[in-house]
Length: 124
Image (cartoon, rainbow, N blue to C red; front, side, top):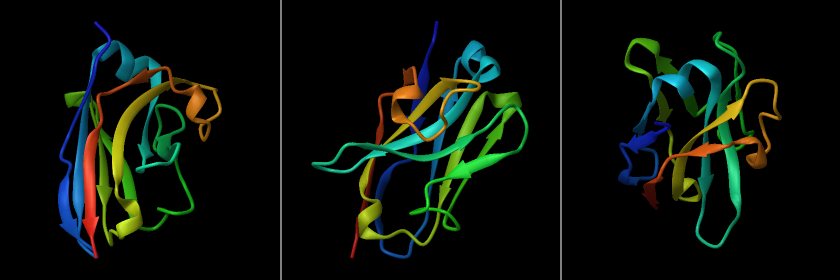
């Protein structure tokens, strides 16, 4: 069964940190590039971060680069998003998603499988 399950969202003050987790089914974790997408209230979904292939290479949206880090634990089929120096504009529902390797990493339409989302709220 293909499944992505996120956790770790919550309410945090500006400048604070949160770590999101995403447990993926084995088939997804080994065959797809994992990433994080977010959707702020009243806005479209936007790319946040992704792995390029099974190696360590990663890409980030310019709005989060230097503040967010995507990493994984292959033994646990888990992808993480460590978020630091959070800003009110980071408030959104964060989705863990998977796309085929070789697809456009920054295009939301490339992501074929999605988790249910986890809410992150940053207060000023």
